[in-house]
Image (cartoon, rainbow, N blue to C red; front, side):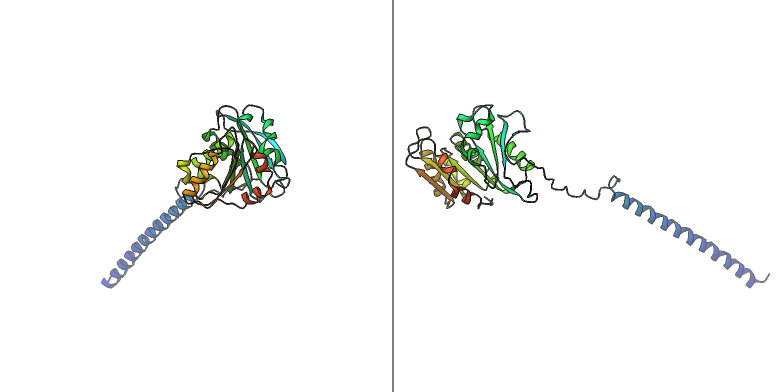
Length: 280
């Protein structure tokens, strides 16, 4: 065999070995890519071992129908001094499934403390609420005084349960509830779009936290139970803070009951429902 022939055979053999190695390396690379892609897909699949999972789709806004008018509800939160509350929804509440209703929270006075929720129906806002175009929540305090921590729990519950607009939450109350309105608003001003305290009092030294809050206060000058200075001092303190959003109605007579006249005034609701929450 000549040198040329031997070299040709050797070269051909080497080419085949190189080609086999090339194919072998190529197969390893391809298999590696397949495994990597498989792991990536597994990581993007719910239940996979990766950390970058596909997020769950957003939960639908589930509409829970309610009986129109005033009904009694039991608070989910236990251990506080509120067991039940009155819920009022307008007649069209169940029809307007996509509409977010304004909501008014009403705090009663000391005379309605107890365990008979039906007494709340006979006083203040619950007495005249039928036909109003907002949702109303009227809790009953079972003992002592309004507890802000328990009211905060109620606030969370009702905003979660009912189809209401969180930017249009209003707070009102009479007598002890007037105190409760001032106190809760001063504690958590970010929660409310406007407040209507009636025949109550707040803490004037802390009034400035409400300087950007629309307020309409009511009191009777001859109130023998809660001195009219309770409202006057808060209104003056708000004005001293630079508030131009405070309204004050003072009747010359009427005794302690400034609420019957206030809640009968349609102008109150026109004003109230125009208010929306702003940054304080």
